[in-house]
Image 1 (cartoon, helix red, strand yellow):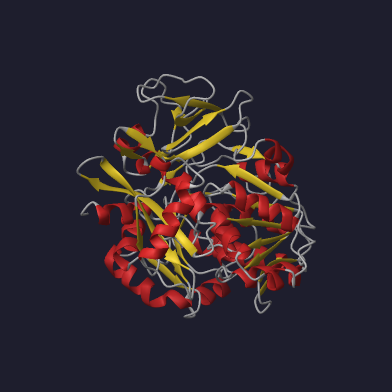
Image 2 (cartoon, one colour):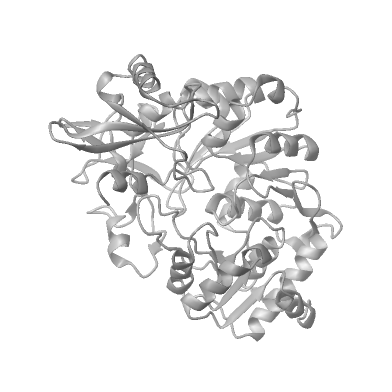
Length: 504
């Protein structure tokens, strides 16, 4: 369950275009050498290494060096400003920083602003390779298991470091919790070919790449998501497993039919999606195209709980994200913390025997994530309900709920409708100040190429929504923008948009 356990000649990681390849032999040796260098530089169990890297196969070398050294890995979003990235490097107390060549300028600025770290290695400036050449590839007697400490995407505020407890055990003997869970659920093995179309600084892509290389499969890394490029990669590499966010589905579905039909996706056995709720109609269309291979889970960077739903279950319970069981029981609670019965909407908590995480250097936010009476019940702020069979249906994030005329409006409902309009490339719905209603529902729309926005399209979109959902849930007005603020992983940074309309 680690790179050294597999055929050294087997391909562990390959770029989608096939130009960069890393075998299991190389992955094992190079991660051992980096781990040796980190020990020689003084890093010890519980220290932090920050990674500022694009989707370079060598990022998995860094991952496995950390995993066999008892360290924390903090992968940093390279789309952040230098100040924002430096905040993360400084906040996590990184003792080392690894930077890819394409991000050298950002890495230099981050190093200066963060006041360190003591050890900085560049993947392409010679320092990383020199460090590996001088280090030992002999496995030490003990290789303590490490883990990641990632920062939330910051879609509802400043990024928070999610700090789990360091696991016990040796990397050669103790699989990670993610390996144990996802291998069992999705059948990862040595025959798996996993397409990663999202940036690996994000929790799900990073952790799934770790699972695949822990189970002997092959990771296919895309430099960046492109709808037709993803289909090309599926066909070229005969991809069996993949992971997506709903915006990727929408963009692939909006390709012309002749383009979609050009590619053979029959190798796909498991197409996983998560990170954001998927509109029911979008998922239906994807299953009509790819077959019943769409598997969904609901979880978070915090790892406080998880639900799963298979294709056959979803067809019976369209819109659900599944049931609890593996990491903790679901609890839906009202504002006072009272547990609500099936069918009633409230805050989603997971009940655990322990407190699974804390926010690094932030006891107040840690406490806010805990139930008022049960500290081992934790939430990330999502709202939803369970039905009589225990299936969870998400409504929206608590922070984004609109209160219009005293009525709760959940933006996701209007977004799910409007994103299917042929003129809409992307959409966000927010509450804006309104003298009469308190807040009014506004849609902010990015139109498809070639579409001219204006009053006529605004009226058409409002009518389109009103034909499909209750009028009070539909937008009262529509603004048009060149591009909405989404993270590269597909999450909508709605707080930025909402704050702009609220005057900051």
